[in-house]
Amino acid sequence: MKRSLLIPLGFLAPALTLILVFMVLPLVVSFYLSLTNFNVAALLDYSLADFIGLANYQRLLRDELFWQAFWNTGYFVLIGVPSALVLSLLLAILLNQARLFGKNFFKVGYYLPSITTTVAIAVVWRWVLNPRYGILNWLLGIVGIAGPNWFGDPEWAMPAIILLVVWKGLGYNMVIFLAGLQNIPGHLYEAAQLDGAGRVKQLIYITIPLLRPTSFFVSVMTMIGYLQLFAEPYMLTDGGPLNATLSIVLYMYRHGFKFFNLGYASALAYVLFAIIFIVTLLQMKFRDKEIQY
Image (cartoon, rainbow, N blue to C red):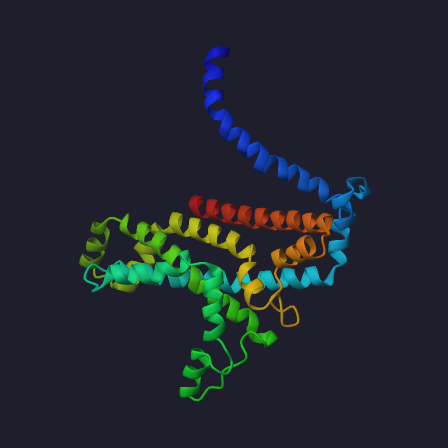
């Protein structure tokens, strides 16, 4: 019996070792750091890091910038996730048409932004949304609308970030929805047509219900990704103007890699983990209730 266990464990040992060293151990160490005042001085002398218990978490509750980042991230998720889901589903439905000319060209075109580096996309969008020379404000000017200073106005900075991130992720979500649509049996639509159901009724009573597993996966993954918003505001606004685009991860980055308050940054990381865990759990509970219903 022992010999039969040693053989599979021997094969699993390299992978388990990597997981232990690069995932489990950092989680344990970072949690301990969140209970200390580990800072730049402790990088040189670890003995200078004092155990302070939950003081970092108590400090978070009184930190106005944290709450600003929390509400900014919540606003981003609340607007961005539904927009991403609806637009990517509509694109998938359009590209799932059998007689669409140039279907593969559009699939590649929409998917390319999702595999393009964020740095390159940020440079392009900085010019697209430039208040004086940007193509978007130029198009708005044609119809008599004065375009805003997208990244310089606190009211428009976050909508501009949302626009960029949703556009960047459309292709990835679209491909997943396409896979889900192609798994729906065609005879269901034929039966619905024979019963006189139009395209809207087919969408409501066939497509959307049968896409629930796919929609659940896309919504959960999109939600988790959007709660970790970092690269776009870091590249385009650095959290400004007036902290209007400061996200939780960007705030964590500032404390961890600019101010070297690694204890406080670790506490921020675990608070974000708790938020992601709770939101994902709520989504799973909601899905279970739908299935029971």
